[in-house]
Image (cartoon, rainbow, N blue to C red; front, side, top):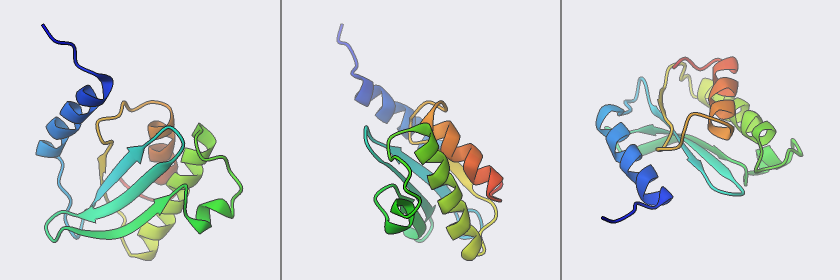
Length: 121
């Protein structure tokens, strides 16, 4: 009997999610990636394999807010930032792809901030 690492378990959960979640031009996929120090969010049109908008804790727009990158407050700022970029691209509805991560902590903060910023999912 072999044990499954946390990363392998997350990848399995993500594959299971991706069978159900696909993005279109009208309703793109909001993909979230979380690392120990940073977070990344992308709006993806899976039919054309095209990224419509993206934001990360490494971007200059995020650094102007002077928030820390690896905490819940930073994730909330990132959620607001991706919501602003989506609304600028005339995107109001998205499909949320949590990337196999639990809907807790930073992932939850990003999602709630994006909802508060005007995105519907």
